[in-house]
Length: 124
Image: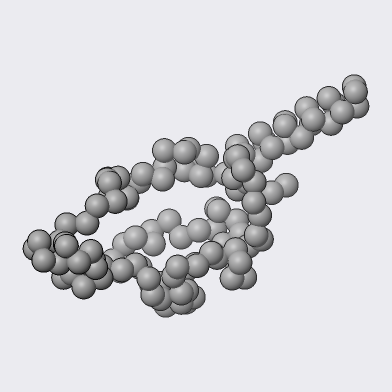
């Protein structure tokens, strides 16, 4: 039992040290709201009652799908990520074209992992 507790303590201490080496925005749960539109209900505003009654939002002029080809850049080390990717003059020509919707881990980027809580961002 004592060996188990010692091993557990070492693992927790190691994960704490690794977590401290990550950029602060990857350690802060609130960071998911940076550069994001405000959350709202999943309602759709049709331009008229006729379209609304048919419930086919894809036929509305207001519909915009996010499916398609996106520029994608994956780095194993978060410190090597581009910090200024959002600038209008950023050159993403060397980035991959990635079909969305998809999961990058099952498409050859990184390692597919699953944990219930918390998501494992760092590896020793």
